[in-house]
Length: 124
Image (cartoon, rainbow, N blue to C red):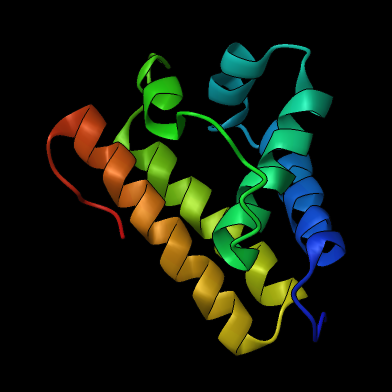
């Protein structure tokens, strides 16, 4: 379990999480459809993204909302599963207070995207 929140620990979370995503029956088709064979660039962007969120690094530049709104076939259950997997990884890798911070950010992001897709928030 990481005691320190830094780029290396965030990279471990991102890589472990997306390894599971690629093998998860519900989520893999959505992610593979959007990312295709470009996983390495995506993982690097996700590390930059989470460093920007958690460390205020400013490394990530992009339109998270706009990119996600282009993905077809997303359902509420995808959010439930994504948040569940993300929480399992965050709690396995980080002290409770840090995992709580990750989850607060993940829930805000999920709520924003759910509202964009469905006009409501069901999973937080």
